[in-house]
Length: 203
Ligand SMILES: [Mg+2]
Image 1 (cartoon, rainbow, N blue to C red):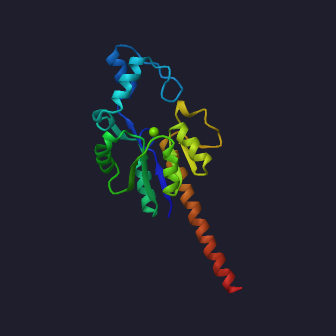
Image 2: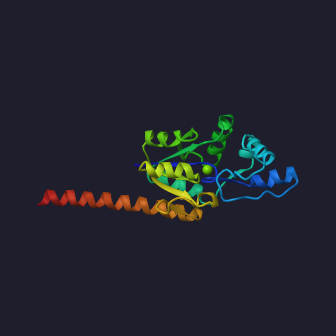
Image 3: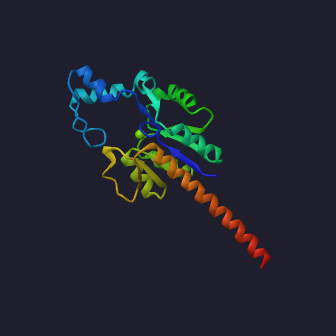
């Protein structure tokens, strides 16, 4: 049995309307989306409005939908006897509604949901014995990878400067296949071990 960890926003779920469209509409201008994490080039008012939006339940939950394939992927992992954990940096004020949304999107599939931000996230992954970590955040992916956790990054413009040694998936079905291959390989290895043990007894 493996403990497999997933980030939530932009990994398992996405927003029906991107935040920059809403913020742009409210400010009456088109926001330029750069390639850097957290968009440091945003103007003060653009940043403030974005920060506010990230704390609003109607946007973070009401506007959120699971990405295609994610439910199938998580259900598959569970059906193979593995544990699915969600570890998100979402604000604590969104805790209850986020848990409720996870139950709705992935009913009976997720073993645990934690709300942990920043560098503490990787310490938490270690503590939980997470074997595979899936995320779009470049900092968490780099930290997890360096600390020896197998890491799969969801491709986004802001995480393309990560080392190419970190596994990358471009479309959700690719993640599904990658995890399926891992599980099949594990199964084969287990069977091989069993056969070898049997053989050694015969000899
Ligand atoms: Mg994310």
